[in-house]
Length: 344
Image (cartoon, rainbow, N blue to C red; front, side):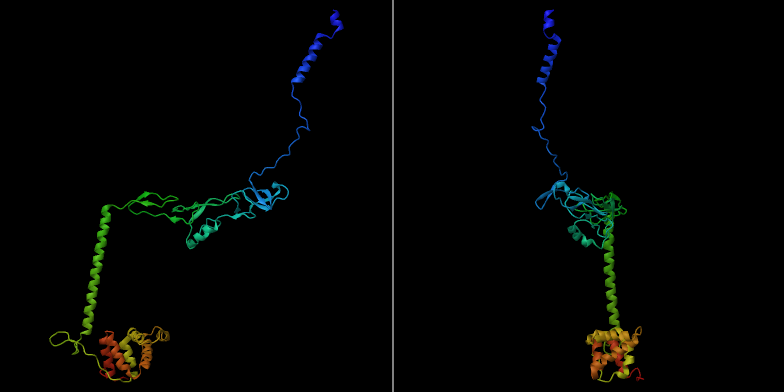
């Protein structure tokens, strides 16, 4: 009893001891001076670029740079790409790239310049492209071939789509896809052999027809040149050497209208060209008398006679014989010799 009155109560002593142990086991508080707070570091999520010795944050895809950073990497100013333009990657470009147009004649508007130059050869062709996915601020337009067309390209960008082949009676072996043309079945052996035989027959018939035409032309020419005039065919029926026609030098002016009718425009033009009469002079005769071959022939014949002078009659007969036109030469000779009557 005396112990309980003169000393501390037992419960009080136990409480004090428990509190002391608890305080000794708890960790000390961090002092503001011992552990100073670190400033928050600013991160560039899209990477950085250097400008005037300073690192600046890049603009995100779909944006372009408006102003470089000055104080901190993140205080640069970016602006969204305008309509019909894009930037597909983080960048520090001051402009956005133009979106590609699938309906452009060469299908390459908006892609790299090197590819545009390469595709300039195709500028007169239709690209046959259509939009697969429209252009966004962060992605270029994606084009694809129209239905019934395919594209073969070494790059991811298709320049021109070609029309798929249509198979005939042989049928389709492999259908046309976006990157491969149609594959047709091979024709049967019988059909192929029949085609070869038909080709040979057509070729033989063509050669025969050509030979017949050549023989016909040769015979007609011989019949035309072998008229009985006492100089071509002998009394025994054998061919003899034709003697050149002779004609005195004379003035052809009074006979020109009749001679022009006998010669015609084609023969007269041939004689004029062989006599080195300029082409413009020949053309002027046609222009002066449009749709009137007789007057064209007469005017050109007059110009030829003026150039030949007094020996025009002899020269005319000679040139006709040299051109294998002896029958025409004989007709002209009849006119100027008066056998068809005197000129009016």
